[in-house]
Amino acid sequence: MTTFTPSTSAEVLSNVQWAAAEETPLELLGHGSKRGIGRPLQTEHTLDLSKLTGVTLYEPAELVLSARAGTPLAEIEKLLAENGQQFAFEPMDYGPLLSGEAGRGTIGGVLASNLSGPRRLKAGAARDHILGVAAVSGRGEAFKSGGRVVKNVTGYDLSKLIANSWGTLAVLTDVTFKVLPAAETEVTLAIRGLLDDAAVAAMSLALGSSAEVSSAAHLPQRIAARVAGGRHGSDAATLLRVEGFGPSVVYRIEALKQLLGKAGALQEIAGEASKTIWREIRDCAPFADGGARPVWRVSMAPSRAHHMVMALRMQAAVDAFYDWQGGLVWLSMREDDPEADLLRGLIRKHGGGHATLVRASPSHRAALPVFEPQPPHLAALSARLKAEFDPKRILNPGRMAPDAGSATLARSTEGAAS
Image (cartoon, rainbow, N blue to C red; front, side):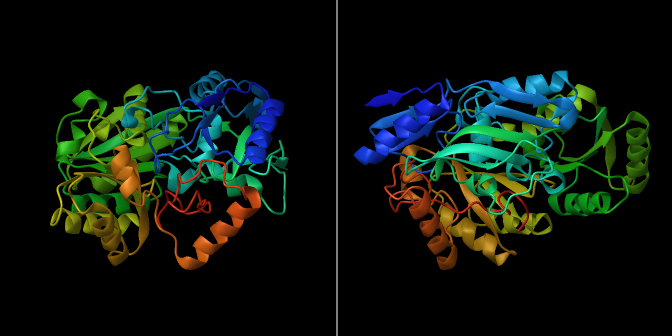
């Protein structure tokens, strides 16, 4: 087995050209923080991009940052924080959930897996903030898409096409993202003790108000104690985050208190304590316990999610919490539950959406459709895209589907309400 460790774009191109000529599959790897997502790969060679690092352009005044694909996300976020800026889409860190280290993800992996966080419905995901990419296709051809300015306009946007392709279409070498100012003040209002249906009503009321809630989530009783080390209590917590300038945040929090005063006991959580809560919701910390129970990421209409979970609990042992503003339900199930068909059937019954198996043993991932199966017309389009970008199927073969590496078309709805 050979591991290639290129440190320049030219070396990446050379490695892929060799693999294409030899028709030899490659596993694409950054730091491996998301290696356990998708079907297990069986390749003799690995293309390790962890040495392809460095921020190549950062213009805070222009809200633009470019970096090589293997640059650690934690390094970039530290640079942004020092300049009062951020990735508004809050890219998730899968490391702890998959029994790895926090902060090991790379900026190329952010786009390849189209990461997002609890601001998803407001701020979008990685694909909504990408400005340009440089990459190498499975044909061994280098190409660029987009540019380095926020107002850049392109026709066929390959940058967005690569989002959510999980390394099955091309090898990213450089990426350029739009960045935004970080909020001056952050406060979370928690309503304690609500059941799922009452929590849905409260979140709907808050999000429909003028308080400009940037994130909302519901942690049922058994889940709430697993966030922030249980420092905020074990009662069910319905969470509403408000961000912005200090006086504005104070005014909007008071408006929410007036609006929701009869819903239940209210608790105000500010500053770093609030940030910790939303970081742990983003990273699915309640299920990052080192266990092997399968974890599913379900994207569906938030107002229907609790009905689906209730129906699921009638037939399977499941823990769940709701990232409402992210349009997500996180589920922890047992391997012996008839999970994939049962779960996806209930999602269709309750308004539609899709489910991704994000944590399971290799044998379990090999036996189930990890990513949502596509309808025939989308599957045919994905197959044509794969044939254009990687005709010899050398890039992450079989990761997304068992048919020799057919890539899934990047969906603008991935991770958002359907």
